[in-house]
Image 1 (cartoon, protein in one colour):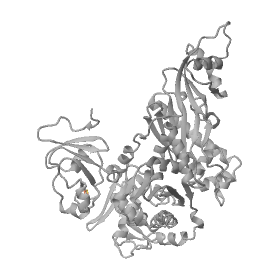
Image 2 (cartoon, rainbow, N blue to C red):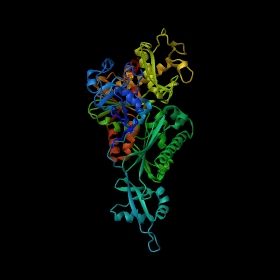
Image 3 (cartoon, rainbow, N blue to C red):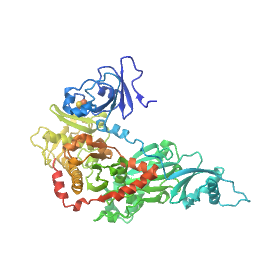
Image 4 (cartoon, protein in one colour):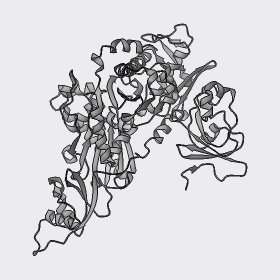
Length: 617
Ligand code: FES
């Protein structure tokens, strides 16, 4: 059966069917309507900054199947002949001539819908390190005085299974469960070299579950998976509670250094929030904590160390050395996590002090690490980690890109929530903005500020250096270099003028300069130029919804044809899920580490001049 939501009722004779992928929706439309009308009818928010006039070029879609009207002049201006031949069209211009199927690239979806689309299944063969074994033992009597562990070991031997290892946390529950469940249990057996370890004791009908967590500096995302099928049963997100101790990891390390129990406090806050997330996931999936028999947690190196309770002082001081880069297995009970009594938390390997397991997970999920042609893969955040894969080698670096794209340090910055400006277009007839949910604007999210700066630069309202043209009618006086009036108070949702200030432009310059400089230094190291890049992978929440053209326009990314870019969503989360359900993926993660050469930007002879150049718009 097709998995489409029919939102338009019964089909009549003179209606066409429009299937919208990858959102999996369907609309029924009348002849003469556009693909944009179809999307709106199906409740799919396609970006349409100019409101369907064919002027903004944002509503790009690709025709996969069926026939639509020939390209209009507006489409001729936006697309090359090759793109038109490949099926690319503007949704506001193309009108179906029959049933059609279209593919909506992530960049053409509004932010919340883009985030919904991500989180597809992880796509690897299911081969978890923990497996269920059902055992029924002979009840203990005065004539059979074997210990419970011996009783189970003997029953496993009858199934030709080797003697397992029982650790103390599991033994605390084992005897009670055996008796409560009439001597039948489902053991969760975790592979441990040649032997296996019992990490959970369940009822024979309970499924074995796993938890994958991606802990970012700002946000955390958690996924609950069925270890037998590999399917994601529930997912949930929360802010990282450590924000209260510092916006970035450097200030959190400083906090930990200043306070005697600072490191433990930061670890405890993390565990409390993770336990809240686990509660939420269990409620949603209607399962119990004890069914979660394995977890994988990824994060940057500092987050990894805070999570594992490792010292962080040396991470915050040059030469920024991690305590460990090898993968770790830590008992959840030692961390205070509400999982099965013997569950282990697997922490994949780190690359360096500022390139952590989350980057490894991203390289794994995107397959970038084994690309044969030059491939750049980066994850934009407060810190941006970048890898360049070439000829089976990997060069990696980390750059401090700041929180501008998370809406922080921006005058009207806000997260991607209703009322946030997410697209800006400056056309001859004025300034066009699109907000999330179509609400009156109240602030600007990361993609909005990137777009605004790109458009202001394209319209000549800001100079290469980032200074405003003082004589433009929309430039208003503002502390530290003026501001551009994006929307007057009469049009905003909070009654305040919506401004892009000179300082905002500077924040974007710092961020984009750092990212571009990181890419250029890796290219220098590899003896390549930007034009040699075959594929440019942009991961992470912000990377998913930024406008690629704007990013190229302001010089954050090199000027490559747009088809060489891929926006892949939260690939670190996908990589964590892959390592949760597949022992092979854990092995590959270790191989990735062996191929990486870390490049320290701050001491690289070419970095300063490349960075200064990259700051220009
Ligand atoms: Fe289609 Fe602007 S909405 S080009």
